[in-house]
Length: 239
Image (cartoon, rainbow, N blue to C red):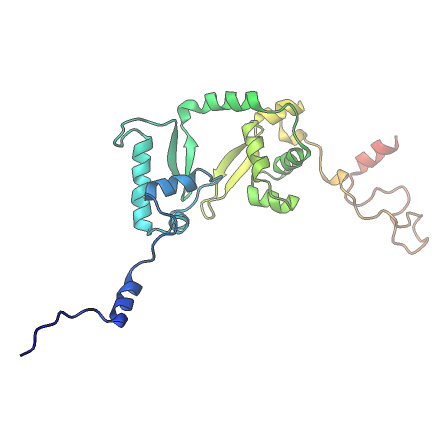
């Protein structure tokens, strides 16, 4: 007669069970706190799938955690205390915003802290937005060939540009200028901005501008305006 010996899992079965367990998150902590850490640094709304990937949690769990945060910030959570900011879903993405009640307070504070003069980078970015609006941050960065995130934040804080709308497909924010820019420039509308084309190089510098029929014929006829430059402006320059 043999005693019954309790069976134990073999190495293979233990490895199989371990493989079925979801990988533990590298960043430990409550899901709501991890979401807050990501939301705090966002400049533009981030979709729920991207948020789930950032915190390493399933989408349904992230959605529930976001709803919990919304209730908490609005004063419907366990603390019952409303915050000065709110969590909103805008254009298919989530982002923290200053509560509307405190917009004027924040604007006054930021305006008081702003330096008197804009940097060269800020002026160049402002010019691109003024002429190309509505325009997204990535489009401005493509034109200037540099990252413009901090510069755009500065211009928004100074009240010179504002968020016009969010693209329904990409979620990108489109920016435009404000009346404050018109006041600083001393103009009534954007139509009074100087045209760009007369200020750009037309590519004819260095070619012969002799009369027609002379030289290689590459130059413009003497006395005629260069391509892309209005004849009236040409006359003003020669007067």
